[in-house]
Length: 102
Image: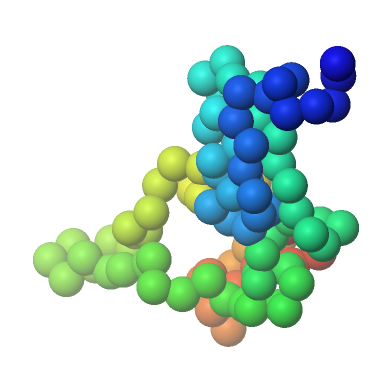
């Protein structure tokens, strides 16, 4: 019967960054995920409580002075998509984001 738990291979509880990444990764590997979120939107505390900016993932290489991020994968994809739409990075912080666009 469509909609019951047997229709899904993976059930993810929580639509925060980790939950969204888990459901997306499962779908990309051919699984049928169900993402459950108690609010009417995903994003976790970044969107529900406007916790901004994302901190702790950026660094500057002391030898080359090049900037980088410690995190890749789906988080990086989200950052790149936000930046392309003008919703990531600001003059105040390189990791500030537009929570509504997120």
